[in-house]
Image 1 (tube, one colour):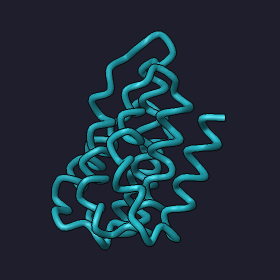
Image 2: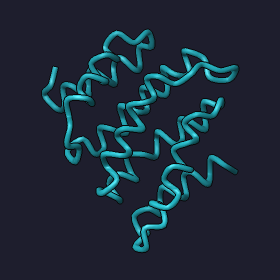
Image 3: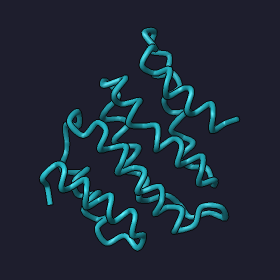
Image 4: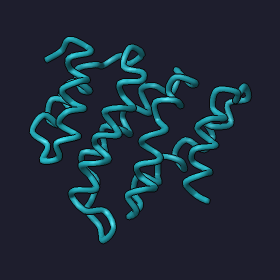
Length: 135
């Protein structure tokens, strides 16, 4: 149910005229510190749509996504899980990259993933950099 709730909250962001998401921002992104990959992946994966719906939160969301590189490994959050999440972060950042003020931090983050041990994540990094002509 938690994963469905994360998805629903992200989808409601575009009609949130009272900015209720702003009130739960940290509660939502605190879930990046849970030990379950799917929970973290859902937060990360939904971040692009939230940033598009709430452009005033772009920098805060970006800061949270960049933290995924330093997630603490846990019982249910292995290095390979982190690699999957990093790929999700690249895709989310791609959704709203045009809104980001400090693109250098994002570009550096993505470039570091060019040496990721997960092929799929490396490919996502390559495509991101090709798309934004930053490689």
